[in-house]
Amino acid sequence: MDNLEVAMGLIAGAGDSRSYCMEAIGFARDGQFEDAREAVEKAVTAMVETHEIQTQLIRDEIEGKGEAVSLIMVHAQDHLNLALVMRDVAEEFISLYERIKHLEGR
Image 1 (cartoon, rainbow, N blue to C red):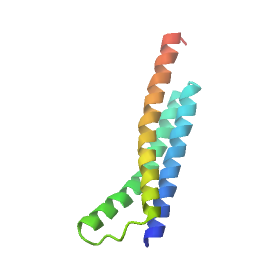
Image 2 (image 1 turned 180 degrees about the horizontal axis):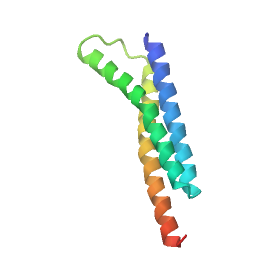
Image 3 (image 1 turned 45 degrees about the horizontal axis):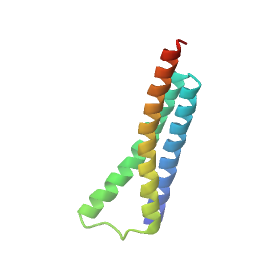
C-alpha cells in the first residue's frame, strides 16, 4: 500500500469516528444517553484500525523503513488527532448533559 492509500485510509477512518462522535453529542443533547454511548463505542471501533495503521507507520519510521512525509500524510494525521480529541469531547458532553438532566430533575 502506498502513502496516498494509507493517508486516505487514515482520513476515512478518522472521519467515520468523528461523525460518530458528533452523533453521540446530538443523542446526549436529546437525552438519549444509551444511544450516545453506543455512538461513542462505534467511534472507538472505527478508530481501532486507523490507530493500528498509524502505529505501523511509526514502527516503520523507527526501523528506517519509513517513506518521506507528504502534505497529504500530515493532513491525515491532523484528521486522526481531531477524531481522538472529538471522542474525549463527546464523552465529556455526555457527562455534562446527564448532569444537566439530573439537576433539572427530569
